[in-house]
Length: 320
Image 1 (cartoon, helix red, strand yellow):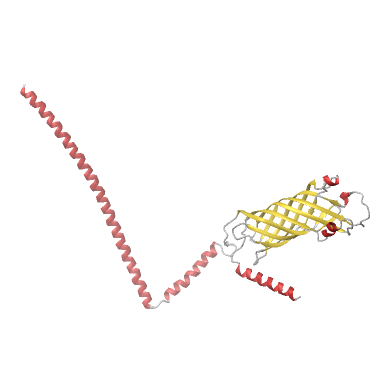
Image 2 (cartoon, one colour):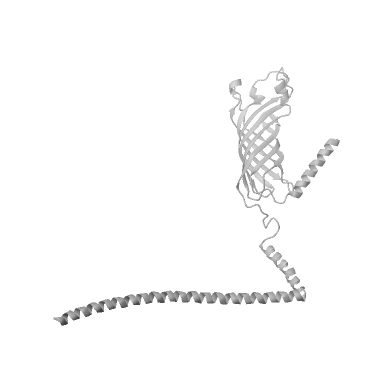
């Protein structure tokens, strides 16, 4: 009893510590995760079949496996709906008679289906301790082949059946990222001739976040909309104005002096910018005037050459 009490106390301390340390939600509404899953389970009495198969006591026996992909869609930061596609080998035996009694048909007491399974489930991350993960759902199992046909020489894949998995475990996914989950699973399976209840685990080796919003508290979550934010800003401004009104006289004088200095600085800066603009414009005009002067000098040189040529021609005519 003392050991149990100590274990409970340690778990309580760990849960409380994680709850206090958690500052942001692991998941956000509209997050979509794709997970790679591996799992297995068995009924607690399966050792009786494996250890002494010739002296089986009455009971239902099963051993199951799961491997495949699942998809999680978060409606809230604590509630998700899940589906996917799994490969599900399932071996079960429904034994309700004495070992020496014969049975008419093997498939009346056992089956070894290899199923394609479609899970449909809802899971929650426990508020305040979101690393705790729990859920319940249905698994639709469609047998597509038999595992022991070659051994028994009989079709043992059985009929369609459903399961009702119940999960409890740990969500190690970091906020805004992907990650791993590990949880324990109890799955009552409702077969044609009876029910088996394998107990095991699911290891979501990795979950990839394929869609989601940034991990921050939305306005709806913290109770503020646009109008509320505006009201909050207005409320925040009032204490500031009140504080300014309650400032001592020397503080007010310093504030007025600083405002005057700022006004002078702005006026000086404006004057500087205006003078600089005029200088740049004058330099542009100067460059344009120099270009015109060069062009005029070239025209004068050309005219002088033409004049000299005409004078030479005139002298030649007069010499005749």
